[in-house]
Structures are given as C-alpha cells and as structure tokens.
Image 1 (cartoon, rainbow, N blue to C red):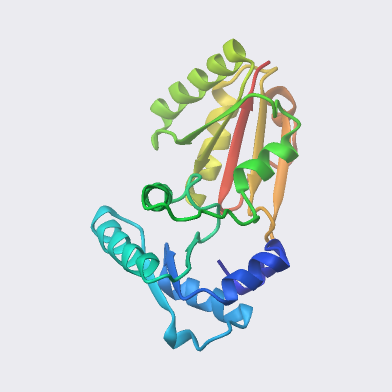
Image 2: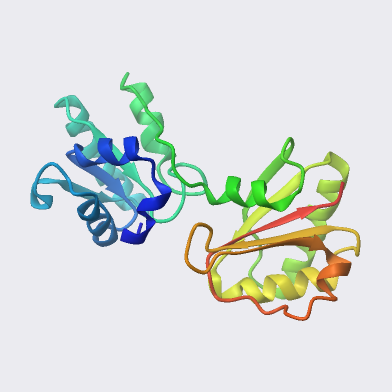
Length: 225
C-alpha cells in the first residue's frame, strides 16, 4: 500500500497497525513505507516483515507466524492494494491461526471487489468472483461468453480482474462478443487518484466516444439478468 492510501484505512485500524510487531506482506519494501507513514509506536527496524507471494515463502511466513503468535505477539496480514485473503494471498495463514486457537480480527479497509460491485448498479445479492480469465483473445472471448451465460442462468453478477496492460484488450473483446443488453462494468484504480468507474449495457458502450482504458489495476463485471 502507498502512503497516499491512508484515507482508505479507518483510524482504529491505523492505531492497531502502529502497535504490531510482525507483518506478513506481499512486498516488504512497500509495506515498510506504508507502516512508516502511519507513525508506528516503535522504530521500523525493530519490526519483522516477511513476504508471502509464493509457496516457498509461504513456509517461511508460516514459520515466522507460528513463532510470533506462540511468543504472544500480535501479527498483521497486509495486502498491497486489496483485501488479505480475498483475491489476495493470506487465507492459509488465517486458517493456520484458527487451528492454533488464535483470535482472528479482520480490520475494515478497501476491497476493490466490493467497491466495484457497489458502484456497478448490478446484482449485489448474488455474485461470484472468477479471478483471472484467459490471457489470449480467442480463449478470453469464450470465457466472457461463458460468464455471460452463467450470469443469465444464475441471475448472478460475475466479477474478474486483469493485469493493467491487458485492460484495453478485455474491453475490446467484451464489446465484440457479449450480447447488446448485457451490462459490462469497469472499475479501475479504486480510491486512487485516477479512479475510473463505468457500467453500461454493451450496446451503449459501443456508442461511447471514449473507449480507451488506462493501464491501471481494474475489476470487470458482467451481468445479464
């Protein structure tokens, strides 16, 4: 998380984070910058940061985590730009905490998936997150049509994410293959300086004068109810 993300984190969550000793994070460098921006209660050099991006480091993170909680220390799980354990790493550590009988306390913060759904005008009672879709155009078109069919059959909003440099391709393929009445939503850089949110039927998207997306983190939504 960046220093300019403080406005997205409630004061009570910031206060808890200031007093933690150990952090399990996606990237130690940016996590240190973020915690430093909070004004922690102890020098940053005294805090432990362990990364959690892959299986090898998962074992290291679990080891540090167990050692810390068995020593009676409080441990924080911190995402880069999301919600720990929800479309982000960390669920296995939370499960481990439960097995060890450790109290788990989720702190309120931004979730790009929920924010995108809130801003979409689509069905918020029934929805599903599909992660990443196929990276190539033909397979992506098949995936999008599959989600469109699933949305119609289940009356369910379908959410997925994509890397910033493929956002434009996703929009182009969606407008090529989805039905005119299908709702398609784009939510990029949520809570950030370049926030962009647009949710329209495919037929109306095609009439838009500007259909070029910036290379920003984004959530995409499909609803054919």
